[in-house]
Image 1 (cartoon, one colour):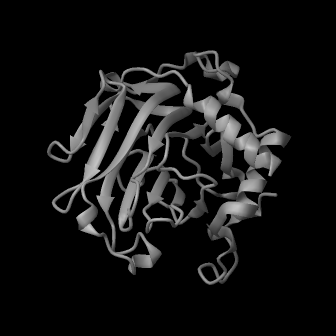
Image 2 (tube, helix red, strand yellow):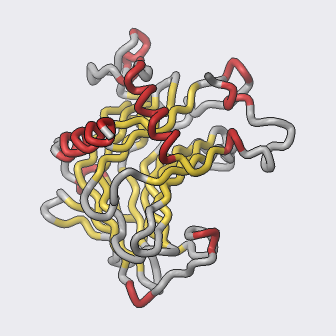
Length: 284
């Protein structure tokens, strides 16, 4: 229980993170007015009704960085809805790093779905249930992406770490710049209890909210990165994310989350991989 209180304290600390203006960083891409940037650029909302969902994307592309965003998810009966927040490149061999939040019946926990695509290949799903109600307040969801790791974090707590295993023949996202995308959409054919629970449109419109975006990252533009000093070991921002590994404390926190809150791990799905799990699953 002590660790629960520590995580809650860290959550409160993260809530105070500084951020820029969302008008500067994002553009609304679809939804016919259902997505809005309000409060002088400090808040972005996506909404979904029976006619359409909505979405936005970042103006910049990034090649490595630490990306933070605070989200408050659809409250109440959100069954059938998916709030997707992810990094992705384009094309059939795209790279992608996913957070997807699968809606629930009132009182049931949200499912946090994560995945990593490299050179067009995904199938690396891990799913979690959170140790708090993600609809009551904003929480920080972060992606740390450097040449050695992709680490998924919630309020600063690592929940998953995907290491660069190119030495074992596993592709790793490192050559394609990615934009940030987010969307709120109806997926009641699969999202909640495998599609058994459908969207209740009497609860529409469904709304998710975003604030306090921060990208301590290498911006990719015109075929070049703005992090020229990365070869010396640090990004041009002076931050340490470029070489960051999980220390022993972070590893223990991640193990705690996975022991208590992970509900699916592709590495242990022997029905899906009868010949044995993919090689990256052998990481100790």
